[in-house]
Length: 477
Ligand code: ATP
Ligand code: MG
Image 1 (cartoon, rainbow, N blue to C red):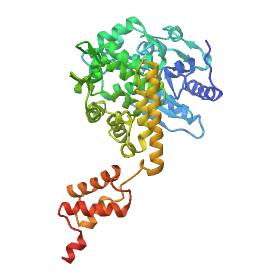
Image 2 (image 1 turned 180 degrees about the vertical axis):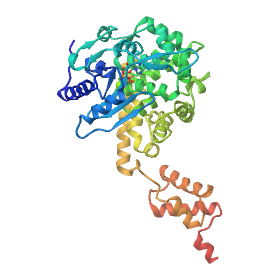
Image 3 (image 1 turned 90 degrees about the vertical axis):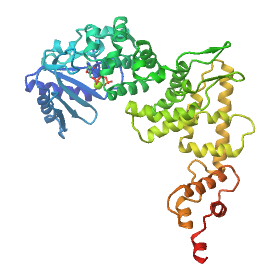
Image 4 (image 1 turned 120 degrees about the horizontal axis):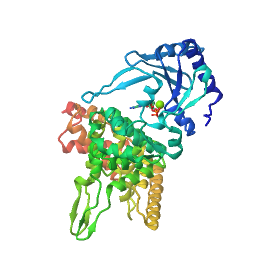
């Protein structure tokens, strides 16, 4: 098989070959770049392995470009990176790794091509293209990686038990590649993940989360979560998600399996957006269902308050996963908290104020919220699904009409905390909040119009009820 490179890529690869020749080193293209080229997937970085000093090679390569790109390197690992405008080159020296059971860190020594191929994770990542001047472009495939690529198989080059025991992160990587590429994990490799699942505990959360995020960004992320569940990894990396599994029955009445439902919602939203955070919101929208589950004789199974409790849990989950605790987390929180609200707006006789209130609370994320709600429809009954979608369409129309009229999306109440403090000579505190909330609520409920003077009067009334007088009045008394 011939791997197809663009003329730009060939230009770069020839320069690497020349540099390696200058230094009299053997040098190879390997890993994700080769794999993804063969699969015609987009690539952004290329792994170059050389028999010798990778840092020296990286510097030599950089010399050959004009303008000269910067080289960053890690002396302890013997790796270097050259950032070209269209491609990032990752240089690594061929290495031999030996692991001892007690230690997580392998002893690393310079190795041969064979040594280096042996320590790689999967056969599909061991396909190598020779960049040495004399053998330029020759494909080396010691572990039948090409066959596994065409048969869509994830398989370790050495004994899987050894591979996973040496570096348990590879178990997550197996599942991540299977999900990203829509491949199957070969039986022996799969069984070995099941047997070694516990070993994942020695891997740092950051590295696990990197793999989870890559699973989340795949076109069908549910595949990865199901594999995590089947291998026993899910129990260790995200037990709360596993707790959604199963349906309980009382008096012959069951509820849906919230694990499969959640994963269906995740796939549904993934079909509409590549936004990682909307996908996390889908995964977490029902996370507190097990904790709020009740069986009520008149109503059957209920999950009252799961949206509010779930939103609260988002903080803990993000902290545990070392996901960013910033506005992205707050977006996920908001979507989880509000995910039932548009459903309540599909009922009859909904007032403008209910619509206004949701527009205000969702703010600029209202479209994301509606996307989550539509993804949340997982009924197998086609007619029901169609009806629910139509109902949401009506909610959207109502929202558009109210937004047109009241401009609630980016609305702020006409009286700010500053105005309240200035008028009454108050410092920030409880009373300012009470007055501010009363004005906001009155406008959202439609009790007063969204007008400065009307709101100002209400402010005076509310303050008077709290025995608070305006500064001017106080002075004249
Ligand atoms: P992607 O860039 O899409 O994540 P990749 O295959 O390029 O995929 P990298 O993490 O960039 O993955 O690693 C480059 C190569 O290094 C891999 O293809 C694999 O051969 C090897 N490799 C990376 N991590 C490991 C690991 N934990 N164990 C063994 N080999 C690994
Ligand atoms: Mg890579």
